Image 1: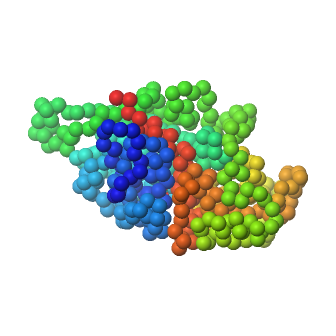
Image 2: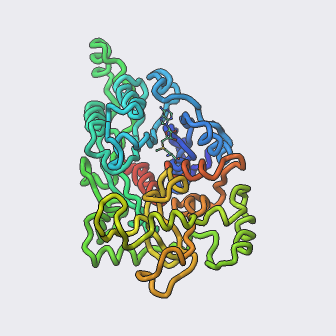
Image 3: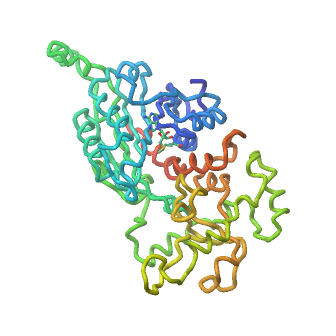
Length: 417
Ligand SMILES: C[S@@+](CC[C@H](N)C(=O)[O-])C[C@H]1O[C@@H](n2cnc3c(N)ncnc32)[C@H](O)[C@@H]1O
């Protein structure tokens, strides 16, 4: 791959990085944000559209094929120091069937893991990102079993952008993996060679985590990433007071909007949108949620459509305001479906939010640029013109929070030895 910009500090060669399941490049942007001395030598992604976006932004088209077809020789050929992997989440999502290792979408990741013991030049560092739920899966058990066997040590995290000052609830699982040792001595090498284990003789750089105290633990606080920390926020397990503190420490949603001043003047707002690069984004009208959908899913109180009695049920729509300090996870189905796929923005502020009807609040979807902002993508990230609106949302929904991944990568690459 051409030069990577992810290079800081002087001295040694940059670390050689492979980016698996590269999508629109969230990992690569995180590596850049982390400021570590590293170079992405190849990216792997099967999806054409994702590769168009990646190429548009990084000037290199990822290897377009099924990761499942890579051999140990292929992987050795890259001589990579680090692998970054964000395999498909569907086998492990709590809303899905959780078929785990039985789901065809898990096969390529399992295959990569199976190859690890056979590599002549295994990586020294690995980074795996997935949904919460992965940590209890059979695939996870397989991952840990293979890493133990191949002399790696892990530190696992469940973290959300809310813990990094971003008003976005998207908790995710992360596994940081570092090789424990060694340079095998010549005599030991000769014995291994005689026993047929010559693939183990390859020298591997010694690595370890900055805070070894957290080895083999699942941590739900960003504290270990920093030298000095005294607050441990666990998003799902906070007291009301701590949750309030956590939310108050976040920036308001407004800071992430393309259109900062809600108004009913659609034409004026459309003109602002048109200044961007996105041809598909030049009409604000397309972002407003149709009233029929607001009526269908937005009632705060109503008659349950399927049960023959009156029941009170909460709105199925997550509505936020410019001054809100939280929005919920944008999935790849955002904009295709309105219910449970991500927050909607009220463009007209009611006097009393809890009493106001949603119909009057002129709900709109966040634009793709706004979702990219909430995922902490840099300003210069762009979609090529031919990527449709639905494709943009789908690609962003599959991606990750750079605000969370960057400090994790910084921590992983900081070798204290
Ligand atoms: C969770 S997404 C990762 C997104 C990426 N981290 C980003 O920032 O956009 C998983 C990606 O893996 C790709 N993928 C799934 N199975 C694959 C396979 N067998 N070979 C190559 N790519 C695959 C999907 O197309 C999808 O883009």
